[in-house]
Image 1 (cartoon, one colour):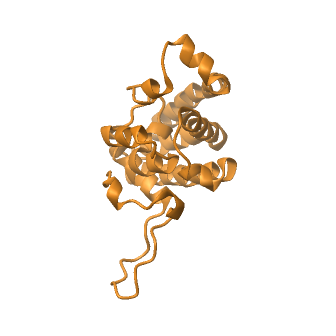
Image 2 (spheres, one colour):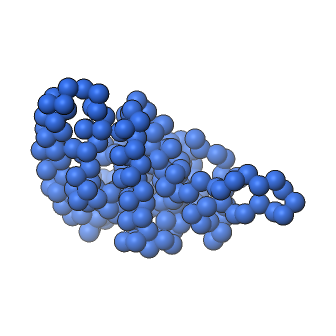
Length: 201
């Protein structure tokens, strides 16, 4: 899933799609968008890889909305700005808020259990929906942390780099190296390891 950094566009040249091929090269077809790469990355995660086609369709709808929300609320250049603990938290909070607005959890449960007994599937959707009602509390906690990251880090005797490279964040070794060089962006995380933003540890 993670191409070498040498194959990636410089920050200032990145857009939602790859650059057009030269006139002399054969046309490879449309380049994948950030949303398409985000979905592909998410489906490579063991938690999502087993989803049936019905569940994948719901997940795709949500990923498309989430990527657009990240662009709209945080501005498109934000996606190519350096990834910091603050920007990563902001991205996770944005996605979590969309989960609560979109009734995403019950819809995803119903889609993943489309072939199960309808009454059982509906009961499961309601149960998971009740669990989702706890998300506003989690969002509030994350927003409090984001407001004063230095205090949070000091309280836990951590530096920002230590936390970003920890299992709690969960960056892959490749993205960790990119972060150490100061080159990691939110776009990189979405494209190569979107579970870091879409899942909460």
